[in-house]
Length: 176
Image (cartoon, rainbow, N blue to C red; front, side, top):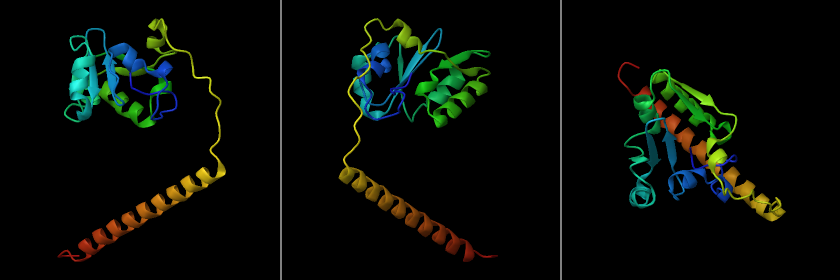
C-alpha cells in the first residue's frame, strides 16, 4: 500500500490516504506490505522517529529504505506459491516490475486486485474532491515550458560532457 493516488502526484487527497488510515503513518513517503501473518512499513530516514510514534510497530514492523528494500523483504517473506495483491491504479510501471520480480524470486506472484481492499473496510472514507479542474493561466504555462526546456537542455549538455569524457578516457588507455 503506497502513499499514492491514481495520479501519482505529490499531494494525495484525504480520500486516497490509505497508508495513513491503515497504519497511522502520516509522512509524505511510505509503503506498507501486508501478508497473512506479518506486515511491514517502509520509510526513508526523515521518518525514523515519526513512524515509531504513529504506527503500531507490533503490527507493522518499520524498515528504513535503503537499508532494507521492499523488494528484498518481499523476496524473504512471501511464502512460496503466495500471492501479493496490488491495486493497479496505485502502481507505477517501475514499481510493478520491481515487485513482480521480487515475488517471482520468492516463488510467488504479484497479482492485480479488482478493487482496493482498504477501500472496502474504510468506513468513514472521505468523499472525492469536487473542486473543478482549472487550467493554469497562459503566462504560468509558458514559464513552466521554458523552465522544462532549459532543464532538458542542461541535462543533454551534461550527458554530452560525460560521454566526451568517457570517450577521451578510453582513447588514452593503453592498447586502444
